[in-house]
Structures are given as structure tokens and as C-alpha cells.
Amino acid sequence: MIRTFDAVIVGGGIVGAACALAFSRQGMRLALVEPAEIGGGATAAAMGHIVVLDDSPAQLALTRYSQLLWREMAGELPRDVEYTQRGTLWVAVDDEEMQEICRKHSVYNANGIPSEIVAGEALVSLEPALRHGLTGGLLVSEDVVVSPQLAAQAITQQALTGGAILVREMAASMKSGVVVLGNGDQLHAPILINAAGEGAPSLTPGLPVAMRKGHLAATHPYPGFLRYQVVELGYLKSAHVTTTDTVAFNVQPRQNGQLLVGSSRQFGVKSREIDDGMLARMYARATEYLPALPSLSIERTWTGCRSATPDKLPLIGPSADDETLFLATGHEGLGITTSLGTAQLLADLIGGTPAIPIGPYSPSRVQPHW
Ligand SMILES: Cc1cc2nc3c(=O)[nH]c(=O)nc-3n(C[C@H](O)[C@H](O)[C@H](O)COP(=O)(O)OP(=O)(O)OC[C@H]3O[C@@H](n4cnc5c(N)ncnc54)[C@H](O)[C@@H]3O)c2cc1C
Image: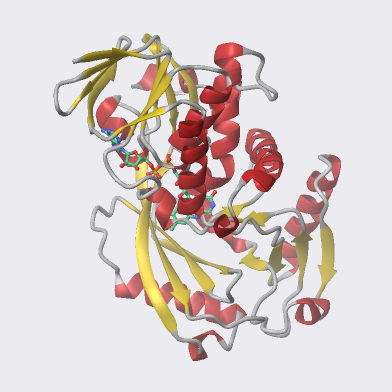
């Protein structure tokens, strides 16, 4: 069977869901292809931290733009998505990290992102669970937390209400305006979006993305244990290392008082099993900052995979060798944050003017090497 649409999106994670909503709001007839649970891939594994980061001007532009889009959407999200302006407290252990805090503070200030430097012992008044003796911190008050899979499902539901069609099949291939499904049906459209996360490279061979496994743990509820999402400044350094396994302290309180404890990064590990050694390293790191952490009981542990590009920016935009094919993948540890920005940039690229320059995310920057 052949069906025709204005656009076909493959992958119903947070990125595909956001694309479906942005495109349906432009009045396009579209199909979202997802054989499994909506948001059941990397999206379900995420912490749901909607965070502004400034590793590069392009990363800052996309994360902030996306965060503002989340804020606009907040009133339309059901309560169970738990959109919460939690704030991030970055903590520094020495003078070198404190210098980085000051640099971050001035970059955020220059870009209209509210942040406040917190001196040494004042950290413990803000977060009594933190150990004494930390050098200082930066409170970024507009960072947000959501429940990522429920957000993907709510966004998909809005797209379906707006007329999008959900196709419960695996895409076997997508090129030249045709998505062939596992059952042999064809979906034709002048615009195809590859938002298949971990599945994206098998649909677009040669895509320069590598999988980075991560572990998370959730404790039982301990209301009041933490107020902010608290992250070591070294998280940024550890997120950049590509040669060895890394862990960093990154703990998020949920609305019910549960704590999500992260984080770890491992390259080239295919197994989804919990690696007890990695989990122990991750917990030991977090305990260096939160000494009472081992006294809290763990409810659940899990792993997930981030899709990483070589330059740590996602691939958003047209493929150079197929004018019908657009990519929306490679978001590594920021795909929940940047999903709405990704979708809006693509929708504007196709039917308007993007609000921020899209060049830094364009697949053409890496495509010559495919
Ligand atoms: C441990 C961990 C913590 C994280 N924490 C955060 C965080 O706090 N904040 C943040 O911003 N990001 C975070 N991330 C990153 C975030 O989870 C990802 O960047 C994001 O979920 C990617 O979304 P996606 O839609 O591209 O992929 P996915 O959610 O994986 O969705 C892809 C979908 O495509 C479908 N699919 C695959 N192949 C096919 C095919 N052939 N046909 C049809 N469908 C197909 C899959 O079934 C899947 O549902 C974290 C990631 C991990 C692993």
C-alpha cells in the first residue's frame, strides 16, 4: 500500500515527537513512524534536565532557545510531565573550577540568562546535604526538570490531535521521498525526517554518530533532601572525554522527593546490562559531594544510550545527497533540552526563517566525511 503525506518523521522519541508537533502546527499532513512505545528509547532513560550549557556559542544558542520554547509550552503540558523550574546549582571544588564558574557567570549574564555566584559555605545553607569545604558555586535559576517520556507522549498526543498520524511499524529504509515500512507499505512525502535516535545510522548509513552508554539510579522518595539539581563543574570536563569511561556527580530531586543519581559515560559498550562497577564508581563520586547519599535506599537502576557526534553538536537539517532527507539526531546528553529547538528550526527551515542560525548544526559540516 502507498500513502502520501507532506512529511514523514521516523522515530517517536522526544525529538520525533517535537518535530511532529512543530510540523502539524504548520498545517502539514504528516506521519510519525514508531513501532514501539512513544519515548521508550533514549528518552525514557534520561534525567529530563532542561539545561543551558555553553561549551560553544552554538550549544548555548540552541539550549537557551529550546529552554524558552519549553517555557512557552509549559502551560499546555499535563501535570504528570512535572515541568518544574528547579534551577541548577553547579559546584566547584577548587580555585580552578571557581574561575570557570566566574567565566560561566559572565557568559550567562551577557546572554540574558540569570545566574548567581554562591560563595563557599553559603552553598551549605542553600543545600544542607552538600559536604562542607566546597569552594563555591553558580545557581542558574531558569533550568527546568521534566519527566521526559511523559513529555514525549504528551507532545505526540498534541500532534495527533492536530491531525498527525501515528504509524505503528518499523521503517526499513528512508530515501528519495519514500519510507519503506517493515510490512512493505510505502509512505511517500517530499520531506522525510530521520529522528530514529540509535536507529538513525542504519537508516542513513555512514552517519557519524557513536553510542555513549549511561547509567542512572533512582532512590526512594526523600522529600527535602535536595532543592536544586546539583552538578559538579567537572561534569562538563567528563562529558567531553571520549577515550575512557567517566563518571560525574549530577543529582536531581524529583517532585515526589526521589533523587535521580548520575552520571556515567562509556563509549563502544553495546550491552544494556547494568555494570555494577560503573554504578559503584558513579555512586562513590556522588557521595564525595553528598556524604549522606549511601544512607538512602535505591529503588531502581537503568541504562540508556546517547547518540554522540564528533563535535558534540546535533545534526539538524538537510542531507547534502538527498534533497528529501532531513536529519534530527546526534543530541548526546542534551536531546530532551534541545528537542523543541531542533523541531522548530527544522519547521522554520522548511516553511519560514529559523530564529537562530542553523549553520553550526547542519549535517553538511560532517557530510563530506561520510
Ligand atoms: C542516562 C541518560 C541521561 C540523560 N539525561 C538527559 C537530560 O537530563 N537532559 C537532556 O536534555 N538529555 C538527556 N539525555 C539525552 C536524551 O535522552 C537523548 O538525547 C534524547 O532522548 C534523544 O531523543 P531521540 O528522540 O533522538 O531518541 P530516542 O528517544 O531514542 O527515540 C528514537 C526512537 O526511534 C525509534 N526508531 C529507531 N529506529 C526506528 C526505525 N527503523 N523505524 C521506526 N522507529 C525507529 C525508536 O524506537 C525510538 O523510540 C540523557 C541520556 C541518557 C542515556
